[in-house]
Image (cartoon, rainbow, N blue to C red; front, side):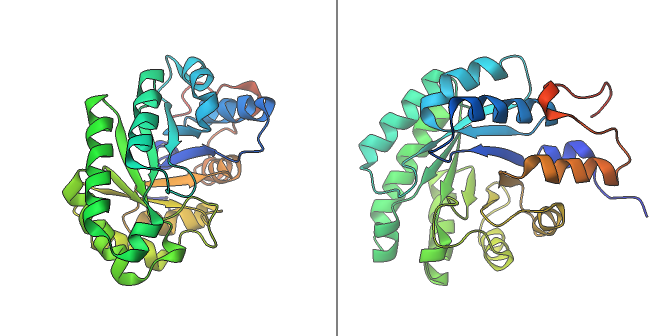
Length: 244
């Protein structure tokens, strides 16, 4: 039976994640090459390497992105806004910002609403988009729902499950919950725990539009195999003609 997706559909869901703080410059360069070869939606890279990432992605349809307030979300709002503005000046088109987990667990909704609104305004003023990371493994259901509502009201572009550095990552239950409690204009991103093409497709069926992935090569290589497409060799940095 024919698959009900194209390669572009799946590659366009992936933010290739390069945010492990121990990655060397050689590994970061190779990771950017993977994103270019497989034509992912974005690269989400460590902030210090964003200038080089922007340079390497120039002229491609892979967007440069980075993190803000990562990984704990405990920075002041002013510090997060400054991070966001610097990233945008450098060339980031998407920002993954960690919400203040302490304030969320405390039920300080006014603080969170102000912070997320300020970050959304800063992102949009610079032509970028904002993803708000909840770190769901530390939150109860009611808190996750309230954060979805706040993000929608504040103008966030996506809600995101996890940093990948907490005690747990994305679950299908959380993804369904977040999709159910966000309006259609707010996307849902899964991070941590989506390690196979089948898991990605399950998340996609729930309405998830982005996946933060480190196993990009394995997932997209399997996607191409299932669709009968020529393999991509990431080390070459290019894809076969007509690959998309």
